[in-house]
Image 1 (cartoon, rainbow, N blue to C red):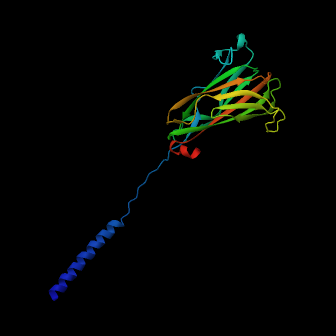
Image 2 (image 1 turned 180 degrees about the vertical axis):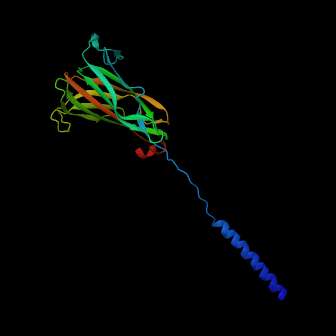
Image 3 (image 1 turned 45 degrees about the vertical axis):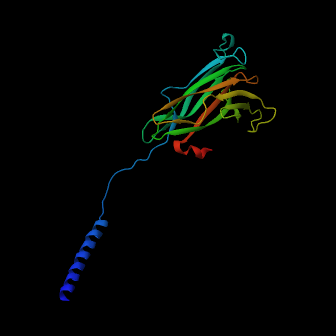
Length: 233
């Protein structure tokens, strides 16, 4: 019996010792120092290739665009530019949030095409899914702001721009459409980091468009992380 008790006691000592070693192993602490950087999602207009607007005309409604104004006129003129500078926090690249197109002294039948460049300056692929368009009317003679324009989207890529004659922000039956606007590139489109996508805006000025005025349009594009595009539908 004494031998049995000694054997049991020795076994218990060995068992407790083993448990102690395992417990020590499980509760050991390891300290790791470092910084974890998350990705960044930044879509911008790229000023390395500034926007360009060009005037065209058509001989008839179904014909092709022809460079320059009809019969060689030099009356209307346009300019395009970016505003609202932004910077990505990780890549430190710069870009702009808004594209502006100004049309001066236009008249019916003038066509204006503007090309611009979108740039993914972040580190995550971005899906561009939506345009935002706004507009203003200014007097070219006094330089004074007149009124906001009313933008009506009629399809995924097509808009009609109306003058707001009484400046109440409501489209009335007697208020004329002055511009047909087409964003010629379809959406959605995915742009990977460091990549660009060249796009176009076509404007056609209708019969009610006013001379001696400036039509100023602003375009913004909205993007989302590439794998969350489904959330926009």
